[in-house]
Length: 276
Ligand code: IPE
Ligand code: IPE
Ligand code: MG
Image (tube, rainbow, N blue to C red; front, top):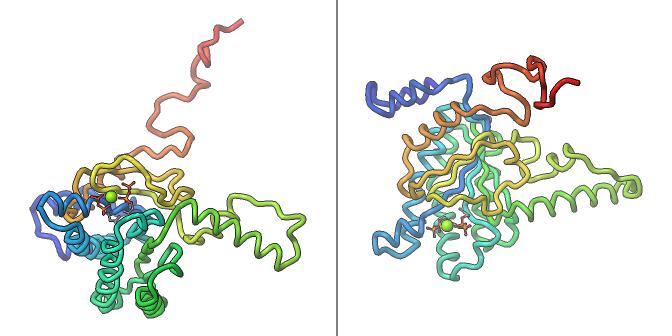
């Protein structure tokens, strides 16, 4: 977290917000649905793709801020399996932008010890984009700092289907299919994010109150944070606001909290049923 203060201006609003963040309660995994690029552009009478281009800077900012805060994993939703429904020209330009981002960012990722991984069915992408991704993943594979998962051609349901098929394939290979029994740990381990902690905080920009097929299994107990801000306008201060808000949440995981006053046993008439 000291790394963050190195780039803040003492006394200003952002610095004060950072002061309010508890370094012991930084979310281990943050996931972001980066939404609103198209509307941001349309509002400015620009083509939608101008919004996607403007969405690169916030990616840079959020990656750097997570690294400075000491977040372990950051998952960014960049393209869903449903986004192929968009006009061909928009989709093609997105692949061009992805290649541009990877080329330009690679030195910075290396400098900041960031490891890039891709989650999704990458094999359906144009070959040039696949190659650029593979190369970035390979070159950053030995970095030990922040892990950035780029969700590309990603779908939560597709991921679950792929996980189940991996489990079945392995059992077939081992000849254990007949007595196969599946549990939660096996499913988690076979997701694209296998081995990573589940997201603690899920941010969605542009105000939409939905999940859009993102990390369906992993967000079971993530804290949700929706902001009206369109992705291209999302700044470091907006990210810090999300983290500060996250730290105020009372995460109960179905149990009880320290903050509730008295346990049920304390009551003379638990469940409101009169004693016989
Ligand atoms: C998110 O912005 C980026 C992608 C889905 C690739 P959108 O393109 O969905 O922007 P809106 O929601 O139309 O404003
Ligand atoms: C979700 O945004 C996908 C990404 C941000 C990559 P969409 O814009 O595709 O989601 P919907 O269509 O509004 O649900
Ligand atoms: Mg959208």
